[in-house]
Length: 108
Image (cartoon, rainbow, N blue to C red; front, side, top):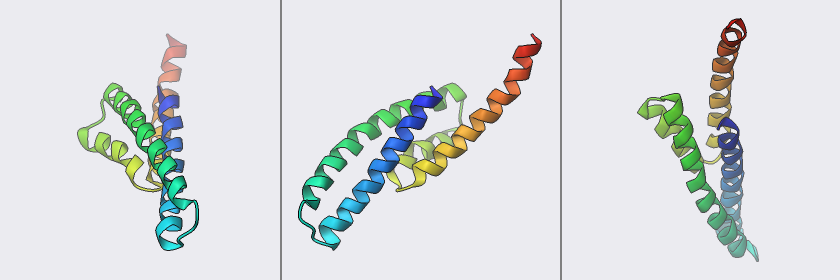
């Protein structure tokens, strides 16, 4: 569950950065081929962001996150580079939870 969230967070984050670079190339630098690049990357990011939303919502509902935290994680895929920082924070949080639960499981 955490792994699929992490993969989609990185993929949507990379695609969003590429999309921003494509928009800069298309409108700011007027480069040939930038329009097609932006169209393809935008399409891929849009569909994969929907999958990311599903995985993030599933993770958040199982972790019983408060609504504010869940919304922040869901919106991280719309802010360039935010997905990387939010993913890292979520992964560390789960690593701490799993580390705390591991000794209890060993003792039982």
